[in-house]
Structure formats: structure tokens, C-alpha cells
Length: 462
Image (cartoon, rainbow, N blue to C red; front, top):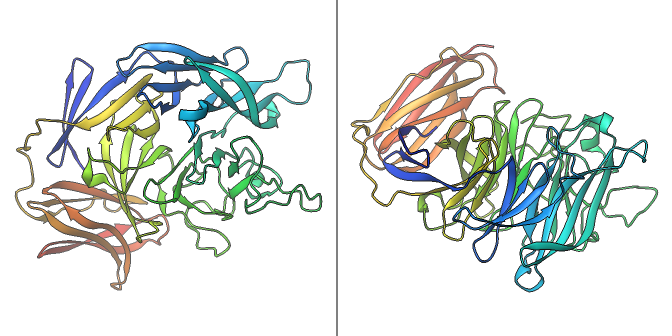
């Protein structure tokens, strides 16, 4: 994890952070929200924000509420992971003013045997107010079956199709082609189903497929994103064991509940990143902007429990379907509870903080300073803890810009993993290695930086 060197609070509004001599600030853009979950930018720079309890509000970036776009409060089932969740503008918004919202709707008590609906509804924006609601998706769920794993984020792909995530309540749902849960789903913007969906059977009763399925075998894919570089789709999946980042492709099966994390079964597609259980990946984007050029084509994801944002180095150009390494990029203020990340048109990174009820903006500090505690020499520290099970931290210093590689080897000298392979600026760094998929024993980690090379021993004990 890249080490946060300095944190300074300015009247509770600006936090100045210096990471490896790069200084930037986290600014509070919108405050006073009640459990915000997701947001979208409007063409004029305003933000439209969903609150879990049912309010959908429009704000200017000077923290002024302009309107309540829609109020689901009287019908919204807001409990545990249910509520008003995803929101997205139509790709042709400038001409049609369509806005799409995912929410969970309570069924009146007069209807027995069912308790709530998962819904996607489209609206026409007229003067910052929702009109002409039209239901595009609805799934009926018995409340007795649970109130978790709604997922519920929605985005348009470059094909102008509407994609959305839907978590599994029961393990068997994720593998069933007859139901939408535990999947990434894909529909047209009018709610009809694209005939090029991988399991489309046009209602064939002998198959009974849910024609909306795009990918299956997921547990709780709360959020996902499309790369602005190409059409690649990445999803964070909260597992019952390890958490994952998955490279989502048409018709692929990601293994849950047969697999949690990497299992090497050719019937299932392994994640491109496996993380310790409890990481809780939420908001996710691929950055492509001018404010943080070193982040271009890096995948960023937020970890809701810890409030950290991680940077993932993507590999295998031009597909970018692997993650070479991941490191901590920034740690947000305690209690932030990030749920969504967005890149603004200004190139800054915006964060929806459900826990603190804020929209935050991460932007470069215009008067960056050199940190006096920067690395003075090349060094590789002993991992900690050691012995360890299953995760350990490896720290190293580089005094000047260098091409850096950190690799893991077994006791026979066979390379097992490359944790870092990139040019890094002078600074102090650390990176995690997760040995969950390896047996107890002696392992080695090696740092190469320019002409410097060092190797140390570590012990995994299970």
C-alpha cells in the first residue's frame, strides 16, 4: 500500500494528503445528506444524488439543493442493503432528458406472499423534477428470504444498453439461468431485452432462461464500471470468503458458490484480483483524466469498511484484463463509508460517502511541497507480520524515480506472483501479499529498482 505521509485537517473541510511527495486535498462538495448511495453528474455540472431512504435530490457544486427530483420515501423499503440505490443519465440525455433509478419498492400489505419489488424506473427531467415514470425492470422478492445483496447500480455501456447488478440471496440463485439474482443484467433503455444477450431464448419454455443475463456466478456485485479506454467492464464482488475484482465478459460464469476467489476451475472465470475477506469493494472506476496523469488507465476502487481507495495497475494491453498489483492510494476520513466513485469533467475524483453523508472531491494541491521524510536510500524491509497467515505487508524505499518490481518466489526459486511492475517516483511504499492460495512454508520476496536488488525470506504458517 502506498504510504500516506501527512494528513492535515483544515476546519474539518479540507484534508491535505501527501502520498509519495504528491500532495492533494479532499474537499467537501455536498454535505448534510442522509445515507447517500450513488450520484451522477448532469451536463451543467449539477449532481443528482440518491439517498437510501428514498429521496433523489439535485445539488449545485456549491452545496445548494436545487430540487427534490423524486421522493420514493413513502414506498421505499430502506433496510439493511435495500433502498434507493443506482442512478444514471441516458447517453442521449441532452435530447431526451431521461434519468434511470434503481429502488426497492414496498408492496402494500393487501398483497400476500410477496413483500417487495426490485425496480428500475425511467423518468423525464422537467425543470429538475421527475415526470412520466416508466417501469423498465421489476423483480418480486419475499421479505422472508432476506434484505441484503440488492447491489442495484446501473450504467450504460458504449453499446447504449443499460447494465445493472443484482446480488444473490441464496447461493443457488447465482448459477441458475432461470432467475436474475447473482448476475450482471443487460436491457435496452426502454426495458426490452437485446436479442444478442448470451442466454436469450425469446421466452422458450423448455429453457426458461432469464433473457436479461449478461454474466452469472456472482455473489454481491455491488458496483461495476466501464473503462473509458475501451469497452472493458470491471465489477467488485463481495464474497462469502475472499472479495474480488472481476473482468466481466459476455456469457461468462464467475463461479459462485462453487468458487470464492481464485479456484482454477476451467468452467469458471477467475477474478483478476482476490482480496482478503472484509475488504468490501464498493465504488469503482477506471481513471482517464488530466488532474492525476499517473493514474491514467488505473482502476480505482473504494473499500467501504475501511474508507480506503485502492489503485490497481492494469495489464495485458489493449485488453487490460489483468491486475498487476494493487496498492492503497488514499485513506478517507474515518466513518466516510464510501459507496461510489466518479470522475468529473474537471478530471477530479468524486466520492459518495454514505457514512458521513457527503460528496467529496479529491483534487491536486496547487502548491505541492516536497516531503522531508522521503526515502534517502534504497531499502527493503522485513515483512510484517512474519510468520503470517494469510496476508503480510512488504515495505520498501526508493530515493529516486525507478522502474520497480516486487516479486514472490517459492523455496525452489519459482516465481509465483508479481506485486508491482511499474515506474515509481521517489518515496516510501508498502504492498500486501495474500498467501491464501498457497501452502504453509518458506517464501521469498524480491525488490528490483534500477540497479538495486534485494531478497528476503518470509514464513507462511496456516
